Length: 286
View 1 (cartoon, rainbow, N blue to C red):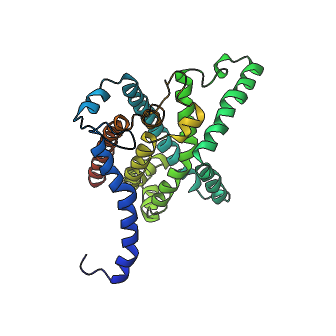
View 2 (view 1 turned 90 degrees about the vertical axis):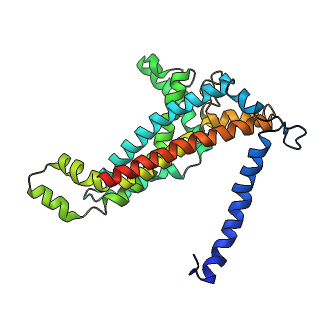
């Protein structure tokens, strides 16, 4: 750090100041206010851990955490499996490889609210029309139940982020030495064995990065949840971010919402750091 040039600090300092003012300072203030009766304007009484005690009695908040965990598990698995599959597809020697990369990545460029409304139209209108035409009741009334709302959110999230995760896997797949693949092929290894025994261990760092990104994104999802189901029916598809937002800005209970946010932060940080730790160890073992 002592050998850093003056120009380095001139470029970094404004970013550090902005990060401190926008992220770290509000976080500290929010953590302090979570122990009070803060209403968004002022705090008149110190409540200690009263807000945190109430959080663990709040069934709606606990249900939203459970729903978010289920959503995160399904999304993480599908996004990474499909993202890796797309990466393997577009790294083949095909003339349309670059076009396919662009097509698969494009959904990630669309805003979450717009995506939510697009898929809401697809699930409600398009699915209903197809279901009526084919006589398939399973396609009718989508987003009207907790189960279909859950899978609707999963489908939307996978469609949006699989192409983004694909780019990460492409970067690592293309860095795999061709000499190793050729040697494995000469030794008689088929395509699956070359992938499992050569490519898979070498792209292990990509799994660490991709799992971290998909995990953090799945837990903090809000705009797609708002546009697609708005937490319905009866808040059964309400994820944690939406539940905290509603507590703060619909019920105007800022301190209580902040205590939920602190618990949410600890939960996500613990899961994300644990995942990174074990994946890093796995990289070394491989």
